[in-house]
Amino acid sequence: MPLMFALILTLLLTTPIQVTEVAWRDAPPSMPRGTRMAVLEGDPRAAGMFTIRLKVPAGTKIAPHWHPRDERVTVLSGRVLVGFGTTHDDAKTKAFTSGMFYVNPPDSRHYLTFTEETVLQLTCEGPWELNYEQ
Image (cartoon, rainbow, N blue to C red; front, side):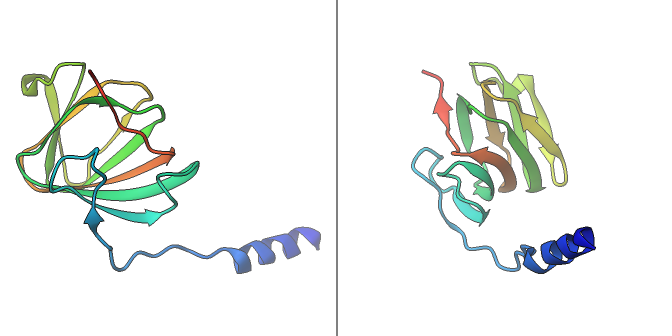
């Protein structure tokens, strides 16, 4: 009986998150100009899991950078070229298109080129940090 009670209590207290409308805002200054961001759940500035979406304009390049924690990325629309290393070189990238998924491991230097407007969904452990190579 206690197990059944715990299951029922969990079901009653669990509130699913359903995003039906996305509230886009300007991304932080660390992101390229024109990038928009929407927070779906959590707080990217605080410890804990969060999910955000980034809408990045065509032609945008993000310089080599790294994050201290895993970054799980799903391409919702568009196309992005992802490369690893400390020098931006589009010839050494892999194209990711709508529906594709990749993970940037902690401390891995990577860079991006957006060949068309692209929407990415990131699920990460906060706080989210973007550290550009010098």
